[in-house]
Image 1 (cartoon, rainbow, N blue to C red):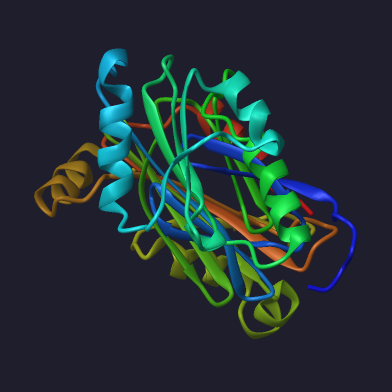
Image 2 (cartoon, one colour):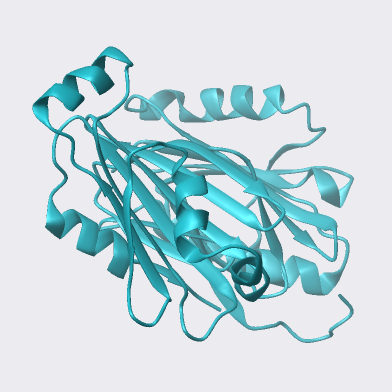
Length: 290
């Protein structure tokens, strides 16, 4: 992108990490703890993170240098640039590295509160990208005091902290993000081109396909924009599903947000009946954002 002024920012939240990036950047999920950001198909920076046991402060520099060396980047410890000084207010432990090649610049942060280790590498090609990357890094945080926020692509999802990432898939036209919550499994789906899909298939059939199970009782509202499916088997049927190693109870819902050409859906499965309050929360906290 050839703009000469910084663009509007948008929040990205993934697996415990949050930051604000330019609206035109694409966030690519490379792994559960690895995000790559691209500007016009060119990588501009990436971050990796993981949770460690409590850090021993007197060994911070030694451990940090060892972690950085494993990246295979030709750079050495350096003074933190002025434009990244706000990072030092967020992270008590911070070590910066600089190489002869600007693409080798980056650093390591450690959060004493949640024991999150974050590695970032700057891959800037222009002065504007360097400024935008600095702003993104300065907004970096690993704390969410009000549940767990997931915001990627054009979707936003807020879940309780006891929901953990299980799997994800970003295919053309279909995004799936799966979680575990105790003995329950949850799957959230976002489908593009809702108008074209609904012209080819009715909403109940799309939900049945997404759920991929038999025995769903499907119902659609009077506006034809919301469809629910449920499976609440008898005791005998529950035993049959358990013998098949299937979770007997399923609650599913698909809907079309009125202002967008998208479909959103969730499928929840559990060995026991699902709490109605949880289902309401999944519906209310799964949204399209732009």
